[in-house]
Image (cartoon, rainbow, N blue to C red):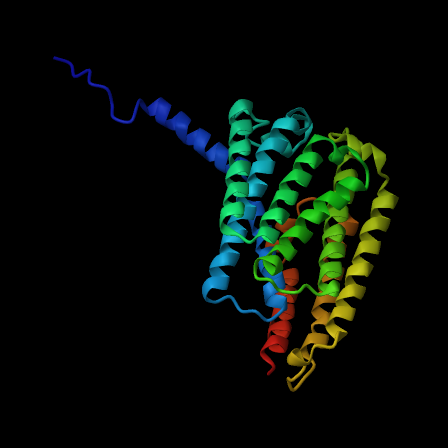
Length: 310
């Protein structure tokens, strides 16, 4: 007699389909973008607050909440941009645009993640951090719905996401934020965002435009924006490094002032990619350019020496 008992866990085809859907959902959450949430640690580290005990737990929680919140925005944005993404040579491979994740499911997952992140922030974080995360989600939703179609405002909104991450750690631990820290992060983020948009404009030339806002920009204007933002970020960092903070100036050498050198060289190195129009994927540059990575390590080493007082 032939054994007709069902295979546990479903048929191989169903298990394979479930596996593809699971992988598609993970890709739609864009795990490669999660590294930007490490900016939450920026303010505590800049203030010399090493991550130990309860402070470390709180900061890890805030990082996770930003990962969940930003993933919710990615899902919602992919649902709204599905037609534009399908016309883009790279973005058409995104799970929602490629049909790997159904739009209703992506929308439901996005809403669920938003609710989870905001609820957890209200329950587990202080009110300042919770309000900041609420603001982040609301601003990003507004961006997905209409702000991304308004030239310059779209750049400012995307840059504000980085700034909110960088200030969240300070708010979570009640650390006063230096004005120069805020200006440096803000203009540094605008530099990266404008360079990304410039690269998208260069890439779209002669190949058809996939985003309405691209039509409102010229290459010259975007070049002006990222160059201005880069200069403002460098100036703010120089003023920050010269700001009087006795606790960080007890070392043998002025390490904090010396950290200006790798910082400026890092900005100039990234500007090379911006000028070539190849800064459309900042995370790829940060992960794969060894010279930029070496400059980042050099800056971290010098700033660490400043904090240690050696």
